[in-house]
Amino acid sequence: MNYRERIVIDSRVRSGKPCIRGTRISVADVFDYLGGGTTIPELLEDFPDLSAEDIRACFAFAADRDRRLNVVPHEAAL
Image (cartoon, rainbow, N blue to C red; front, side, top):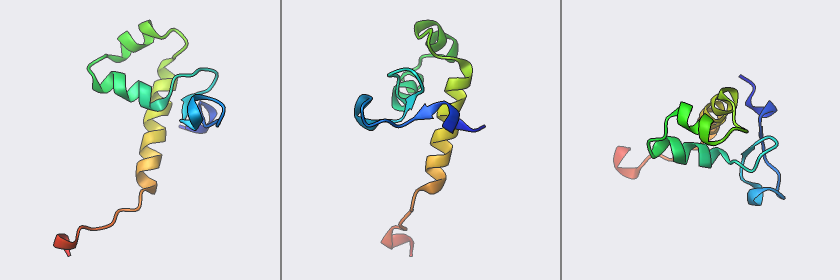
């Protein structure tokens, strides 16, 4: 999935947080709701501007960001 079609970063929207295109709903908002126990169907019902594809784009964005993290090994692990 090309999340770049749905996730945008604009310094004028939500202080530059990654958001769903055309909304002020951030990727972090989506994960906060899901992490708090809201189901995807509930999220889609509560936020009619969101689509299932938008939520999949949030997951793809997070996976891509995770792949790009620089991990510094803990000294004890060396």
